[in-house]
Structure formats: C-alpha cells, structure tokens
Length: 508
Image (spheres, rainbow, N blue to C red):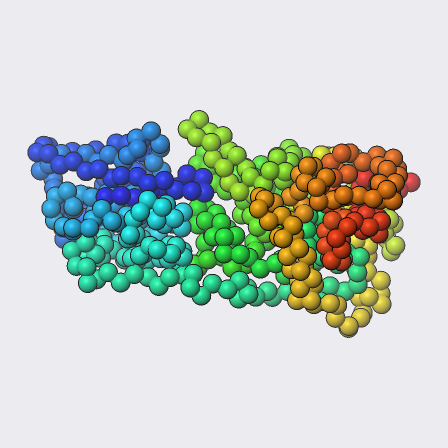
C-alpha cells in the first residue's frame, strides 16, 4: 500500500510494507516514525475491530514505512496502514491495489478524519503514476484539482475497503479545475472608497503594476490601512499555477477553508507587530510556513512598521530578495516560497504628528530620530516606494464624489503586466520588481539626459546601489503604464520622488 508525506511544500511517496508472521500479537511500526505515527498502532488496531474486520492478533505485525531515512510525521498514515494490514491478511483483495494511494487519520470507531497537506500529496501521487487516491471526505475538493488522478473521498475505513473489493463503488470526486475562473474572485472593498490621496493612489497603482514593495508614512487616521487593504483589488487575477502554489501552502498549514478546492483570491496577510520571527518567516519544532509564505503571490501588510521587533524585520531581507525562505533543521532543509508584495505603514514619529497640519508634534528630535532608526537602511532599500500620506483636508473628507474604481485601475495594471510578460518571456522573471542588475542593463537602457538626472539624485540623496536599482525598476514600471518603450526623464523623475525616506523625515 502506498501513501505520501509532506516535506516543505512538496510531498514524497512512501511505501507501507506490512509483514505478518505467527507470533505474540506485537504491532511494530518502523521507518523513522514520530510519536503520532507510533501511536497509529493503537488507533489502527481499534478502528479495524470496530469496523467489523478482524485484527490479526495472533500474528506479529511489522509495518515498515519506506524510505526509512526520512522522518515520518503526523496522523495521515493511519488509513494506509490499516488498508495494508487488511490486504496483507487477505481480508480485502484487489487486482489493481498497486494503482492506489491513500491518506487519512482514523478515529477509534473507524471514521476517517481530514489531514493537512492533501494537495501536494495528490500531486506526488500523480507524478508517481498512481491512478487512484483515497482521501478523507473533507479533503476531496483540494485533491480533485489535480487532473489525471481519480480521487475517492471516504468517510470510514469500511468505505475505503469497499473501493478495493467492489469496483462499482468507485465514483471519483468531480474535478475541481474544470470550472477554474480567477474572475470569480469578489472583493467587499474598492479603491473608489478612498477619498483624496491622489498621489498615494498613483503610487499604489505603480506598486501593483510592477510588483513593488511600498511603505506609507503619515499621521494616525490618514488612511494608510484603508489604502493598503485595497491593493489586492487592483492586482492581476491569479493564474492557475499561482492558485495551485497558494493552495499548497494553505493546505500544508491546515488553513484551507472547508469545501475549498482552490484559493481564487490573492492573499492579504496583516500580522500584528508582536509576531515572532518564526511566525513571520516560518519555522518551529515542526516547521510550518510563516506569514510571508502565506502571503505568497499576494500582499503582506505590516502596520506600525517600527513597532515590530528589529530582529524580526531583519529576517525579511533574504526572502524579499530571493522570494524563498529556507529553514534549516538537523533532519532536513525546508524551503517555502515567499514571492510577495510587502506593504508597510508607519507614523513619522512616536506621537504620530510630525509635520501634521492640524496637530503639533510633541516629540524631541532625538526621539524622532531614534524612532525612525528602528527601520534599518537595508530594509528601506528593499522597499521600492516611499510615500507620505498626509491628513485629509476637510473638503476631501466631506466629498461625496467617488474616486476611480478598482476595476478601472486594475485594467491599466493588467495591461502593464502584459507588457512585462512579453518582455520577460523565457526568463524566470515575472515582473519588473524581480529584475536583477544584469536585467536592468538589458531592459532599462538610459539616455544621457536620464543619466544626468540619476547622477544628480545619487549625489543629493546619497543613494545606495540597491536604491539606484529600485529607481530604475520603478521608472520601467511607470513607462509600462504609459506603454512607452524607453525610459524618459519624466519616468525617472517620478521614480525618484518615491524615495522620500532616503531624504530623511526628521524636520527641524
């Protein structure tokens, strides 16, 4: 009997080998099992008896989970072990048993409980050439998104055994991909609800068009969170491959909603500033994806950015560059994808009112400098867009005229992304934000006028090499929104304006 286990975001096949020999009724599970797998013995023994099958108590049972050099974790081995025992003891028979794989946790009464990580298990089963996969009833929608694999949901061990003995009972779950349509994603918020802040709306559009990271700085109540929550509404729809990657992560984390086959909306993750490093990037004694992986192909929103522990923020540096998180453990190195857009917001000072038009700041210059210094230069360099969000004027707050809708902005974003798709065809790059220095030389040639502007900006703002690259990437996105082939001075000038934190916010 075959099954599979998850390692990182992928799964690997495991053979459940069962040997029965006359003996004292001992039940031994080998193959580097963890505590949950070792405890499967008593669950399986009781479930078989309560399903009116006969547990071979007069035999010595040895179950080997091969390969034996990888640790087996979780309760998902219960069902395949039970089926392996029934097959080995001759209580069920099937000519095509080798075409099956199974996963599921057993209750003592023989019912099958759902587990995490079924989608990557289904993908591994298909890659291994399996034709049939037996899964718990609640996990069927996510497993059924894998084409070319018949998924059989079962509610009990008896149902699973019947699939072997009675081929007529094999009614696979309907495919979950046939009706795929990312446009089904609906949002309960819209960019038209944002009053005023036209320059911030423009920055948000540029961020969406090029996949750029962004930080907003402004006093409390200026609308930073309101604006950030509307970024997913203007991002391009998910592709099927992106939806599968996101669904795999949520499946492994045990966070896939009930009856959800595929995640159809880009994630928006807003963790609290008290989150630990492991909670943000992943890890733990049993490694799990962190918030940055749960935001894969979506948005990670870090409100009150300086309030996060500095060491926690620093661990973002490598994932923001590489788009992947690697967690090293003694047994194995696990990698989780983390290709996301980071949107951060912060007050300009501890009281929040530095430079505010309505309320005076009560902070000293030293307090302001110390507060802003909580965000390191390397982290700021990785945030392409720095934008100030001032308090709304009275006429803007009282206006009843709606702003431009998310649908209208999204259409321009999709057009700009289409240009990038054609530009980067045949490369691993998906958008402008992912360009490397050598890509900038190829895709962002600059004229003498643009070079002179950049030289002046570097001298005045003391830009790092990374910040210089960010300006070119932003300028390329602004040009794409204009459907321009070459970078103009106006594109670069606008990009330079989005580096306000390089100029410093401390006002004397």
